[in-house]
Image 1 (cartoon, rainbow, N blue to C red):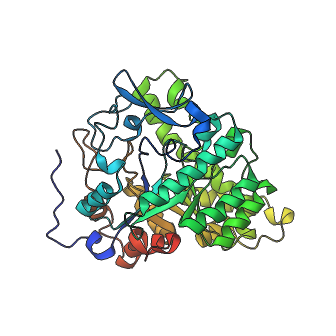
Image 2 (tube, rainbow, N blue to C red):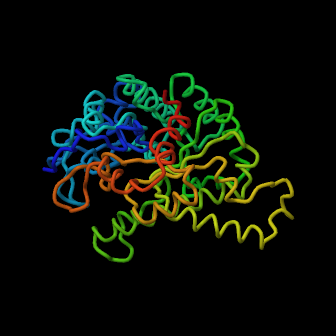
Image 3 (cartoon, one colour):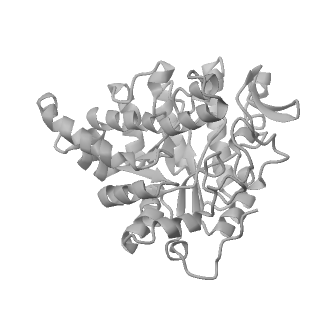
Amino acid sequence: MAAAPDLTTESLFDRHKPIDVDTHVTEPPDVWTSRVASKWGDKIPHVVHQDGRDLWMIGDQMLGGPGFTTAAGFDGSYPESRLGFHDIPKSSWDAQARLEYMDEEGIYAAVLYPNVGGFGSGGFLKLDDEALQLECVRAYNDFLVDWCSADSSRLIPVAAMPFWNVNEMVKEVHRAASIGHKSILACSSPQDFDQPRLADKHWEPFWSAVQETGLSISFHIGAGDLSDLISDPCNLGPKAAFSRTSSMVFMQNVQCIADLIFGGICHRFPDLNFVSVESGVGWIPSYLEAADWQWSNGQVTRDHPEYDLLPSEYFKRQIYGCFWFETGALQAAATAIGDNLMWETDFPHPTCMHPGPANGLAQHPRDYVNETMADMDDDQVAKILHSNAARIYGVE
């Protein structure tokens, strides 16, 4: 077992009350069965115990299981995993235990994302009735607000969206804001589900609704097609395939950001803040340099004379990136776009920053921050660890 963090000397955590902007709640077994009308029967997402493992099911379709997504401290890697609720950390599914874990690690607040419904809500499309899909989205959003009420100043809920129906999205945006959600989770790759790309005017009512609420929009990686995780098309073997896809999935958010900027969403909705979640940040300066170059060489303003900023300027005005493991790449990103960075751990996912066993990479979040950010200007560290997130998510 990893040694406990040294809390006797002041660290960057002590000075800046860190806000972890990407964590996940392992949904308890009764999230939907206790909130969705019983008339839907086994179509309601529910847990079954099969061959010693807890699995999430919709009818006879398997949606994964809590053991697969709750890997913090686990001595192994995919396809090895824990089995279910009896052997995963309580802090993954119990709010009070999560707060205790945060206290142990010195983390002030945490932003919460889902597992079962998918990182952009695409999992709900496995349901074969749109009324049930919508009811399940609302049930999850109600659950998450209840879960975060254990300490609503430190647990920050992000609302799922029924992205397959824009009119219902608009309604759910306003409902979610009214019950206490602090951000809106959008699908970063809707084209993977036969929906228009983000640059399409189809989404204008959604952008407008979120801007009216004053909330931010989160684009979490893995919200699109992840079939490579399962199919291993290159025949690499399960561990290599998982690692390959886990590194390449960052690129889904490059496409997302390109659509937001080149599609004019940033221009038309200047008060919206967007967050690229769990995508790392080292690639962002390189992409923005390329975008500025192509924007100018391609004379984009001939098509859109109303665009009055370069891509990098739109980004710096309203888009944020999140990191949790980078070292050298982080320094370059901090130099280029330091005011647009936020820190995360991805707890309790397989690649999270967490004190763990024998993989040689796991460490306490505070140790990573102290080592990696020690030479940064303290005002910049304050923005990255706390004030950017406090402003984006309304943390007091």
